[in-house]
Structures are given as C-alpha cells and as structure tokens.
Length: 363
Image 1 (cartoon, rainbow, N blue to C red):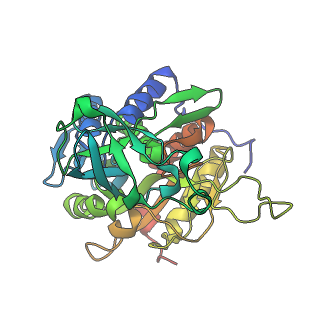
Image 2: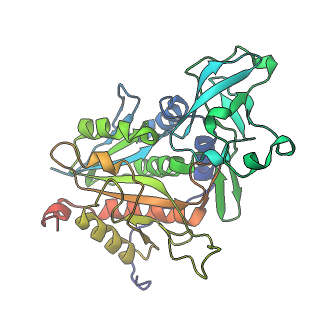
C-alpha cells in the first residue's frame, strides 16, 4: 500500500449514530428462521434511501437503489440478518424446557449462560449440574447439549411452546477500540450494508440483500440472488480471527485473519473460490485509497457467496469480512477500526466500479 496516494473521494467514517445502530442490531433477537426484529430495523433504516424494498417469501429484505447511468452494472451486496441460537423442543414442566441448537454454536459455551426465549424475551438460564456436584469424569468432558435444559423458572411455566426460539442474553458494549456483543456475525455486515445504501453511488445499480437463514446453510441468499439477478456480488460478513497466542508454539502461524489489520478479502473457503478479477480490484482499491486490508487465509468456513455464485449460470463473487474473535459463542469481539475500514473499502470500490471490471476473462 502506498500512503502517499491521494484521491478526491471522501471516505465514510463510523460515528456514534452508526455505533448506536449496531447496538440495536446486536441486541435484537433474530435467530435463524425468525429474523423479524432485525428485518424491521433494516426496513426503517433504509426506506428513505431506497427506490424499492421487497420482503420475499423467506423473509429476505431486498432493496434496490437505481442508477442514473445508462446500462449500469448491477451489483449485489449481501449481509445476513440471522444469528445462531436454539429452538424449544419440549415443555418438561415447572419452566424447564429441552431444546435443539440452530446453527453451529460452540456447545462448550452453553452451561450457565443467560438466554432470552420467545417473542416476549423471557429471561432464562441454560442449566447444568454445578461444579461442586459433578464427578471427575463430568468435569473433564464437555456436557452434551441433550443433557442441558433451558430453565425459565416456575413463574414462566407454560409461557413458551415448542418451536419458539431463543438466544444468548448478551448486551452490546463498546470498550475502547473493541466492540463486544452477540450476533456481531453478521450484524456488523448488516450495519455496513445499511450505510452503503445511504451513500450508494449513482453509476451502479445497487441491489442489497439482507438475507435469512445463513447459519442453517446459506438458504436465503440463494433465493435473493435469483430474484436480484446481479452482474456480480459481494458478501459482507464476519470471519473468525484466529490470532491469539498458541501455547504450543512460539508464534501463532495458523490463522484465518487478524484483528487490527483491516477487512479480510477472501481468496477461497470451503464453498467458494472468489473471482480473481474482484479480488484484484478490491486489493487495488485498498492500495489506491490507503485503506488497510488483509487476505483471509484460504481454508474452511464460508459465506453466502457459496450459494450466490452457483445460480443463474454463475455470478462472479467475492467476500469481504470483518475479523472477530469468539464467533458462535455468547459474545463476539471486533475492532471499530476494522469495521470502519471495511465500510471504506466497499464504498470506495462501489464508486470506482464500472462494467469493465468483468471485461477480462475470469483468470
């Protein structure tokens, strides 16, 4: 990157209003399959800036911001609204409920966690045998999820039913440069996409997908991509920052990405090989505007790009993610600067984007 490069484009920054929006999004309860709370925040936030808003049969929010140019390139941006959580399976009496997980939750994190259940956000605890009553074998093994129960107390007995959903009761907090909250995967992406809609450039047709059920297998984005029929797509998400010290090594040499090094541009993951034209374009844009960035190391995991690129005869895709620690637990930790630089990078890329980006062959 060349910090001496200067441009006339004013890049956006994150201020208290965007942080307040992220707090509302993080604290909202929108488990996969019931994204209504986040969906309403999204609709209220983008309505004044959009030419068309549609909620499809799955619950995706599809937003169109029209171009003022003739034959503009159609750009899909996707961020998923849902979060991991659980579904009530059976009422066992006295406010005790069995449950099943929705999404890839780290089950080691479940015992003793405060939760919110159902439409009324009833407070509860995921119960397990206390440590001073557990035998040696139990202390050295993760408690299987099927042995755990949600305890809402006798006062809430009968107030939720099988099929009702819940998630962790973590509340958002900013601590200096760090942002901590539940569901920042992918409420950081949702907040970013809302800001990009507010600032959409006129030379492209912006097609925004706030998608559902990503945590259950990238379900909503596939439907959204078919409906929007874009020329290319960018998935905006959060990716695990595996950057903590490793006790068995002098240096951590195994990581997807790191905090404090900017947005992570995907090269490849378990479901997608990103379009090399888009990878190069994003990297060149970051260099041009002196925006810190990193490459997300190829490997496992995935984003909604994994289904978007396989419809309509193939859609060129790339993913850009905000690094975060402790994904799929009660709290994710991210950096404000990484979020802001992700917003800057995608905003700058959208402003520089023309149909010529797809003129060369893919490789």
